[in-house]
Amino acid sequence: MTSVADRVIRIGTRGSKLAVAQTGTIAKKLEEAGQRVEIITVSTPGDRSSAPIAEIGVGVFTSALREALLDKQVDVAVHSYKDLPTAPEPGIALAAVPLREDPRDALIARDRLTLGELPSGSVIGTGSPRRMAQLRALGLGFEVVPIRGNIDTRIGKVTSGELDAVVLARAGLARVGRVGEITETIDPLQMLPAPAQGALAVETRVDDVDTEHLLHSIVDDEATRAAVAAERAMLAALEAGCSAPVGALADVVEDLDAEGAVVERLSLRGVAATGVEGDSIQILRASAIAEKHEADKLGRSLAAELLDLGAGALSR
Image (tube, rainbow, N blue to C red; front, top):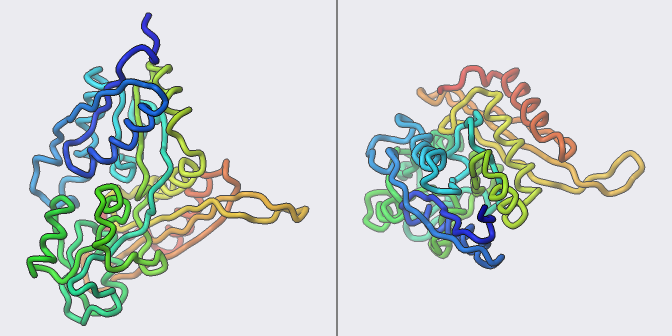
């Protein structure tokens, strides 16, 4: 039987520039460890659709990759973690969660303006209901419009004058080398990012234990895995889809235990927007801290707090 070290690992990716760049970071880590790899592009229904993300759901970007994995067309699938449904997929294992890129949102605006400098009435584009809700809740008088397309297309709407600004994930801009075009990295106090934003999920089949162990040993980052687990547990407990107006950000922080010794714990902040279909947007906020191994419990308890505050009225 051929060992994993002796064979070429086939890594499946979407064909977008961002997806290929993300997959390339995983391929590079494996190659640096002496592993031979091949990147295989898989076309997904989401790439072929022009409908708004909120209508089609981001799961359409991941389903084709998972099917290729289960059909053994590829050995590994690399996803933007925030695009994955929160429910586990039978037959698939989360082999690794690499070190996360900066999870914050970023503004690219005309004349290199910041949010505070854009005049009332400025037109800002985003494909995310979460960003839409939080931008409107700032009370700065922006007109927020839905957009689709890759990074080049979205930024092009600003340079052409069609929009005054767009909001994108900073991580995606970093991965395609366009950080220099950011006019403001938005403080999470103003706009909390999507659960798992900036993180990648590297999946393999549950019966391919050798590949799973290889990926975990080379690619996985323990702190990122714990943080993202807490964020996605909150999202799942809210029963909100990955395109819902929900934000979450967890960090591993230093704290003191009962004896005064420094320990690492997991801090989680969450927001949920209600009334997003009308003019009465309300942003509900909660935060909590727990032990690192209690990520799932932390996420679920924060969701319960948000539900008590009224998050049950989420538009889904």
